[in-house]
Image (tube, rainbow, N blue to C red; front, side, top):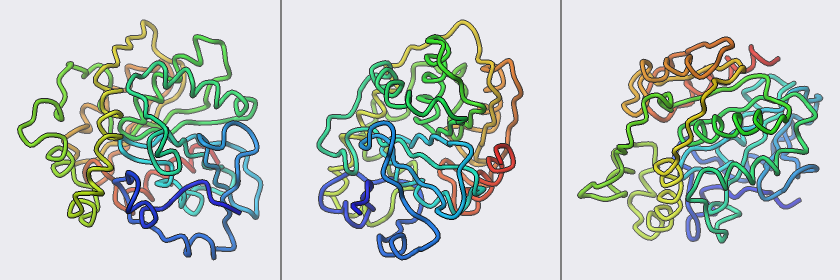
Length: 286
């Protein structure tokens, strides 16, 4: 079966890469008999990368949105971390991995409009949404649009590493830098050293990253009414982009329950941080 994602090791000569996490080889996934990556049976296979345990039914879908410059592959190992009843569905935006030759979005609403149609076939089953950094802001906008169109709503939202929308000032740390976008990438951390040392590979990453960041910097979405969906926020204790204090203000974006979990580390969670995040999600949804 042809896999729907391409790991960092395969991408080295042709595409952008996910920043966070340690690359896992194809062999380690292909030979793991307990897990299987399923081709999408609903929705668009370009967009949706479905992961589920082979040995148990999945009762709740967890739609996962990657960070700027990232890809759905960052979630391929989450079935090993989440409760067996949760199906991981990674969203692959164009401009990366197996969609490298498709132009990336540069505006939020066209992205969300298309994503609504891609996700529509999934909405007859319970689902939650997890978004990290840029993915969190896509999640928030998407959920408002789902409500406005009277479509089934998620049972819970999970935001990570993204300051609450109230902190939007119109100023962005990647804009107007003397060292350019490359300097921002190096400052943020999370990018493998091998990528930073390879100018050709870094040059392949930057256009997609630039498009993703433009989605954020041009987004002026300002809903008048908060959501009525429980939100759990995950904040890195040392995250300079989205401090726990800034993440705490997500409580103003919902009239339902809000929880804030502080995770040791910065803007990109390490394996222990990921275990804390997936553990909390499992306790909520299982």
